[in-house]
Image 1 (cartoon, one colour):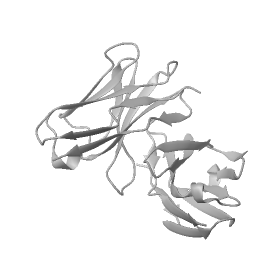
Image 2 (cartoon, each protein chain N blue to C red; image 1 turned 90 degrees about the horizontal axis):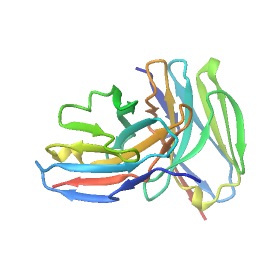
Image 3 (cartoon, rainbow over the protein chains, first blue to last red; image 1 turned 180 degrees about the vertical axis):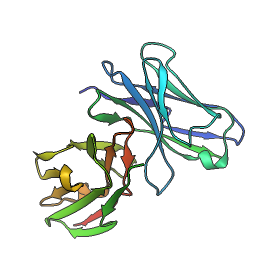
Length: 111
Length: 109
C-alpha cells in the first residue's frame, strides 16, 4: 500500500539554524500539507500546497517558514531561523481530495 | 473557525471491554477522519467518514452530520489499542484538517 514517507525521523538543531524537513507524498496525490504537534498537544495545520503553490496557510506559518516542491516527488518544509518553540513533531500529509494520509513525522528539537 | 471537541479526554479500560469515543463539531463538515496515534507518534488512518457508518474489524464509526457528531466504537479492546484517538474535520473554509484534543486510551491487560 502506498504511503507518505518523511526524512529525517529525528533532528536536533541549535536555535537560529535553518532546517529542511523532507516528505515524499503518495505518487498520484495532488494536495500536500504540513502539520505540527507540540508535545502533548493537538495537531495543528501549517500549510497546504496545490498546483505548485500555497493554497492555504495558518497563522503559525509566518515568514520563517517556506514550502517547496523541488521536483516531481519531494515536498519540503524549511524553517529559516529556528526558535525554541519550533520544537515539535512535524507531519506531512497528502490527499486524494478525500482522505488525508499522514507520514510518520519528523521530531524536531531546537536547543 | 470550526471547533472540534472530543470526549472523554482520558479512558482506562480492561482488556476485552468495549468503549465509545465521541467527537462534536461546531459547523457542517466536508470531511471527517478518525486517527489512532500510536506510542511512536505515528498517525494511523482509521476511517474517512463524513457521514454514515463504517466498520473495520473491531472498530466502527458513525457520523451524524446533521447533529454534528461522530462516534468511534472499539469492541473487545486489546492492549495494542492504547494510544491517542483523534477526530479531525474539514469545514467549508478549506481542505485543512482541524483536530480535536484527542482521547487518550489505555487498555490494561
